[in-house]
Length: 258
Image (cartoon, rainbow, N blue to C red):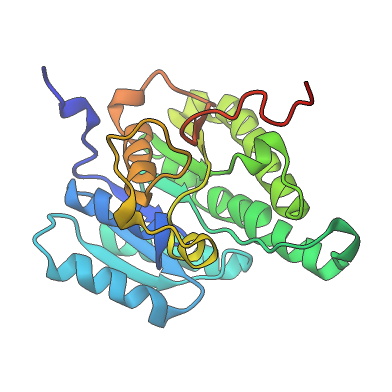
């Protein structure tokens, strides 16, 4: 059976929030498949090592590190310009940059609420809007990173849940608007993933996770990268405006009082 339809070789991708965790894994996966990747985060010193590792490896894709705060429209426009200037175009945009904190709703300040909405929602808007002409030039793919928190709610993380719900809705709306421009817009809603941050909070290391084990509710960054590559590839050509939930075994009936 041919697997060529899963390849994204020869394309160019921007992955925001790619200094570590899911974003870093996506960048490395894409580069391994021959994609030229632009990795970015708010601090240049955090994203430079990611690009250096890719460029010093045997991966066929090249990497460019760009400092970019996704809440700063001028910085985002400079990111897109740097991408087109370095690689000649843009085929895939992965809106992975995000932020959250835990607090009771009563204790969330207006500034705290605004910060989370700005990074997650407005950042996604800035990057997608600034890249629209490049993505429509020959067709492309936008992959937004949401969360199960945006589908099911998230006690103690209400601004994060609200932001991710907005991203899911934006995905559906934009998918319809941009379909005639041959741009597919889709979304991924991960559950618990063993990122460095989750490991520090929950004590679960990715090294202890067996991908062959079905009965689990925590995944690896590589598993999210797998789904991201699928959505970027021709294999998902009939997948438009969808949110793919990646969270392992569903929690059915566990919160019900019987």
